[in-house]
Image 1 (spheres, rainbow, N blue to C red):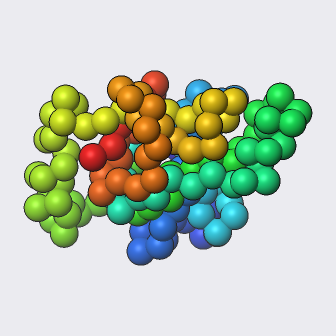
Image 2: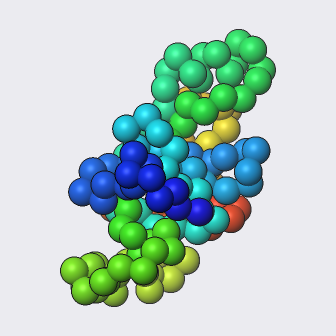
Length: 142
């Protein structure tokens, strides 16, 4: 769902913050402090995994979840379901979009376990990724 008011339009030249929205069961896209989109699937590039230390400490202390963990990076209109001329990213998409899942790593975040995103297969921290693929249940990075 994309809101059409000008203040809700995504500036695709700037990074966004994406987080798992537990109430809506989807991914939320935030930019300039506003939630601008929701999506079940999306792709991002040039990503950093960010954890708000204060938010994490509040979750641990109160045993109640809050929004404090994000993937920070760039998205493209095509990646969240908008019609857009894909030509500028065709080469990039050929490299990443067809990447087999067995060459990617699933990451997850559990604030009660660690204050970082971790690789599912070995529990090591994940801090950045060239590419991230979000689907309804998983987050894969390469």
